[in-house]
Image 1 (cartoon, rainbow, N blue to C red):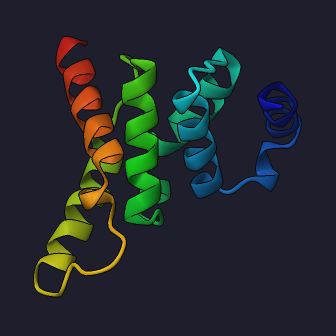
Image 2 (image 1 turned 60 degrees about the vertical axis):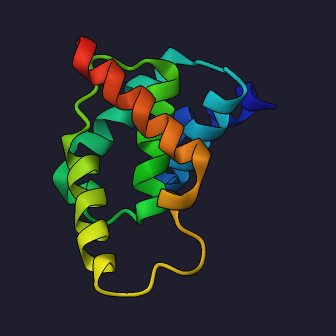
Length: 121
């Protein structure tokens, strides 16, 4: 199943939004399905500030979490981290009720893994 989806993405990457890619990478990471070619295609997108600033907090957190689970050491996470910081600042003056990446233990674990991975690189 995952291989078929990966091949579809690799054959026509323009048909998939960065948000879809982030969540698909996270799904792959959850089941420990590492496909190097997909990672080489997708993770550089999230390094770009123009792409990261259009991501929702959930999508930016998904990209960071996937990178952490996969142990992506060469990936530069600054753009996604900046996006999450901007969202956190924007939300700090409002209620944080409802679904939030910051309240999801899975995303928090991914952020921790990403931080550790980045410190080792």
